[in-house]
Image 1 (cartoon, rainbow, N blue to C red):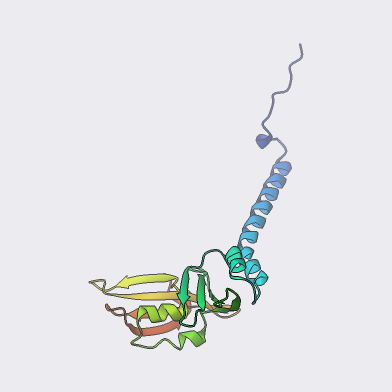
Image 2: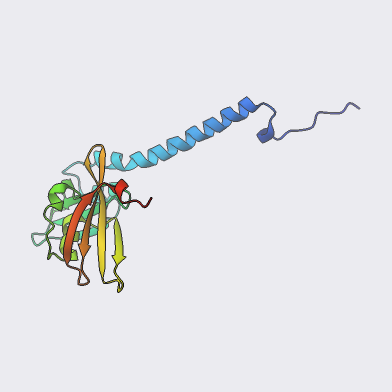
Length: 183
């Protein structure tokens, strides 16, 4: 009886080019999935149009991080894209449940409205939830809130607000985040 050739598992196939081709195909599929996940948020926002229903916004964007109720019956829905994201979307919903506006709260115009003496709720109402919060001091009394944002299409920045132990703004500023990383 003639001896048959030993069976080789496909993973250990002797043809290295086929293995490399299969690996490249797998990497391409993985890359495509990752790219689709990153682009998903942009697609969701592009599909949303002013005039859409409150239910349509919820279906596209999910549950908002924060809902601010205004005296006139409007609701402001915040969708932070942090901590690594560079925007916080604020959707204005009218009393009759219609999307009236979509804005990014993380703008230099909004940052300029932050003043010493404001409290944390006033800051949060203007900018949304911070991407990062850091404690400092021996008694951990004060802290800093930080948001990443885009100054322009190519310049990512970091905006920080310093609070005292009572939660009152005592300082603010913007910097290039690459300058704040430890060496």
